[in-house]
Image (cartoon, rainbow, N blue to C red; front, side, top):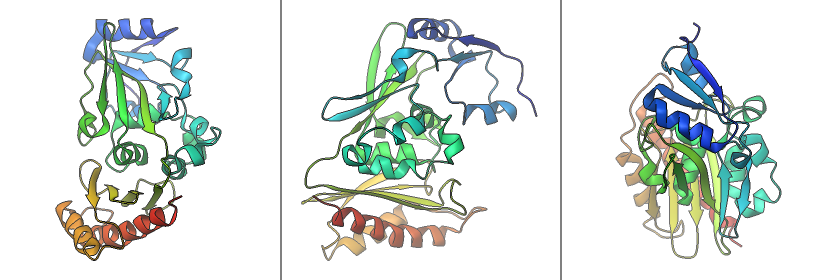
Length: 275
């Protein structure tokens, strides 16, 4: 299929893009990398009257590190972030997750913020943002607001973003001393969306485990340390609470078993990486 007819605006700056969103509201869609939006257009699952291309807006192409957060602009491609200097030391979970996002060809076009906006429950970047406790920075013509990742996503491909808002950036906390980070997933083939994806943060006091690909959006939970006798029971309860169901890709039982096994492996890897 081919997309329904639409108008196209190549925004020269943020003000032009935001004005278009203000005028068109729900009839406009932001175009950045297009790796999620274009298939939806071709299948006519999305029928915007206007596409607003923001890939030529200079201020959206920035990666900023203020010492506590990595702020990734709306125009930053996944491949650019993947090759960013010191990413593996500044935020190793993010570096590990990017390697699982699609293929090199799609990462060369897809943007970080576009993946967050699309909010696919099996996607790696929304899971990473949630597990790390990152934030989404939203902007309209008149105001800005920031939402934590857990408040931004509301369901399967559903978010709190209003029709006249765009995601101007997302922020990932940088790695902290004494804390370990890890990311693992299992899919039918590398580059496919995950059947189960796991992201873990372990410090001296607690474990944070995020799971993607099971529920209708990524879920995170605080667990005991992997050396705690209660860890196995807590992880098992987490697997059951996700309410995994059978689908074309895997049974609910298989997904629960993956949460237990892959989840433990990811947590143990994170614990071993503490510095």
